[in-house]
Image (tube, rainbow, N blue to C red; front, side, top):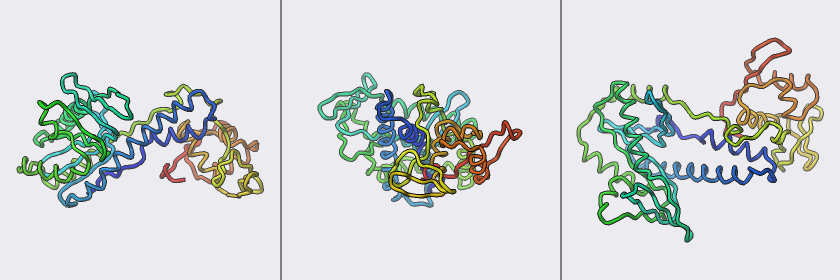
Length: 326
């Protein structure tokens, strides 16, 4: 049973908004595009395990995706956490193409792809640290008796996994995603004792969901981009022309002649992702490229946003139920 669904990470949504709102000639445009491409590949890899996990009996397993917890000292991120009465498994998913060699002497991952060799961080070190941090979190919440396991799951079926002959037990920790159901069934035989009751598992899941803290960093601070560098206006949803004009209560595209009443909502989602929830009458005028304070006030009022302050200095708080929806 999926107890916490996988959603598009906020970091991807922010990068997409930033790429939309930067001119292709911007000096950091290619860096942002590359960063977004890597993030999307990682997300695609994480989604690839959904199919093999669907073969597990729903009543026996609870699955939580995209968890970020605090162990009292540091935050730690988990791609997928699988909970059953016998044990808990951390699944660290890697979408890496080509040939990967696990160098256990120097604890590094060497990737060969298209004739190019690259040294990457060893995901086994990452999962070992995640096990320790999750154990610390569980102990703090009085669940110290349950075994914590971890697997590095390679989501690209064409990836060749290699290591030195003496590391013959690597296949106990590193697997292709299609082998997941078989591997989990093997682990259940290795750990036959039930350590968690149904009541305890549900209590643990409630606590995990309650203490989940998604990472929410300023994408503009990360890439050192200023408000003035961001493209302003309302994109046409049909031809993507920037910017639409406000004409007689509608947004009008003078390129393809499309009209739409609420086209500003997508623009305000971009504002939210780039600048945060707080917006003023002046800021909405600057961002949507409208001159009338009365129009901007009507647009804000129509969204039924919470607000603080007197009329002159009023701050509105943008809120969107699903940022991934266009």
